[in-house]
Every structure is written in structure tokens, then in C-alpha cells.
Amino acid sequence: MLRRRAALSPEDSVGALLRYWRSARRLSQLALATEAEVSCRHLCFLETGRASPSREMVLLLSRVLDLPLRERNTLLLAAGFAPMYPETTLEAPELAPIRGALDAILSQQEPFPAVVMNRYWDILRTNEAATRFFDFLLGERASTAPSNVLRMIFDLGAVRPYVANWDAVAESLVQRVHRECVGGVPDGRTRALLAELLAYPGVPRTWPDPGTPMIPVLPVSFVKGDKRFNFFSTVTTLGTPQDITVQEIRIECFFPADAATETAARQLISASTTAA
Figure 1 (tube, rainbow, N blue to C red):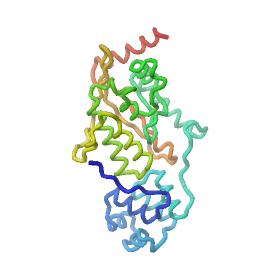
Figure 2 (figure 1 turned 30 degrees about the vertical axis):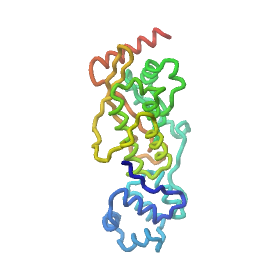
Figure 3 (figure 1 turned 180 degrees about the vertical axis):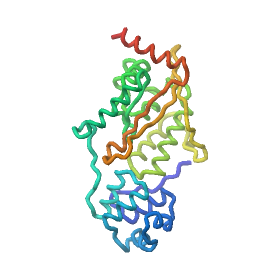
């Protein structure tokens, strides 16, 4: 059954946040103190509130704990310091090089689908192949389909009826969200998204099963009429970002798992051209 960790709020003390993240990273006070090259006594005082960390100490512990940039800002605020990392909208002029890189990746993936998502699986960008593929599956409903990968997969009115191995795919996705929710990021929006997924019809209450190992590569099969597409996917993130938006970007690229899928994906190009 799902174990729920108590939610952290913006009012949580810096000590509570440090304890949370140390526990999430499965580190003892001694292990964290050793890695950060600070005294275990001082770390204990920080966690219990008997001492207040300097800005440099907050950044040091954030780095050692490998916190996402959003959570580093939260820790800085809890300690009484201004946030350090910006969260720029993807369409802002200063992120033009990032948009250029994303467009290059999406274009290179043609004629196979690729989508750009944020931390919450919202679709930010797609290549033409993804648009063609969703149009093929959903027809006129493509324009009103959820703009979120998870909702697309779980919603009976979206892609779900066309996923031949839906049970395996859906369980794997729930495991991924669950791992981020309780093992990585104390984020209310991610917890709410997980609860939403578990509330969809046909989702077993036993998901996710902690004893079920994650599958390194999970094929996903889409079937509509006499057409079948067998894909596997890879997820790419952008290295060493200093902006929250950039760090949370994920690019999921779908590759054909067999020659028939490759042929079918290429045939969608001529089909969409003829329809136009």
C-alpha cells in the first residue's frame, strides 16, 4: 500500500527541511556531516533549531543533498535568505538558447514522436511526429485532449483505449510519480497528481506496490484499427542548469521497437500530407 509522508509546508523550519531531505537521501547525521565536512554536533544543532545556518551553509548542504533548484530556494527562504535560482518562463528572451536546443532535439527525432514536459508532466512542446500521432489516435478529439502526458494515458476519453498494454504502462508511470513524490520531492502538486491518477477508473488500489521493481525499458503498444505502433522511450534532461524551469524540463523521445512501427510512423507523414 502507499505510504504517505507528512506534507511539508512553506512554514516548515530549516531544521525540519534538512531532516526531511537527509531522511529522503537515506543519510545519517554523521554521513551528511562527513560529506559536507562540517561537525556532526553543528549539523545536529541546525536540525534541532539550536543554531541557524549561514547562507553558505545552506548552499553547501543543498549541494551535498543534491536538492533540486526549487527546493534549494525553499531551504534558503526557510533560513531567512533570498532565493538564489530564478524560474523563468520558457518563452522568455533569455531562454532562447534553450528553446533552440529543444527544437533541435524535437526535429532530430522526426519521424518519431517526442514531447517536452515540465516537472508535472504538462506538455510544453511536441514535434510534428507527436502531433501527427495524436491526431491519428484521437481524430477531432486531439484538440481537446489533456495537455498532460499522464492524464492522456489514464483518461478513458484520451489515449488510454489505444494502449494495448495499458496495465503495465500505467503501473510503471504510477511508480515513477510515486518515487518522485515520496522519495524525492516534498511537493504538494505532485502528491495531488498521484492521488488523481489513483482515482481513475480501473486503477488498482494496490498500486504502487513497493515490492515491484522498476522495469528499465518498458515498451508501449498503441493499436487503432489495423495499425499497431510498438515504441520504447528515453527521457532526457538538460545538464547543469541554473534556472528552475530549465532543470525541470524533460524530453521524452519515442523510438520504434520494430521495423513495422518504423514503417507505420513514416506512413503517417504521407497520410497527413494527403489529408491536408
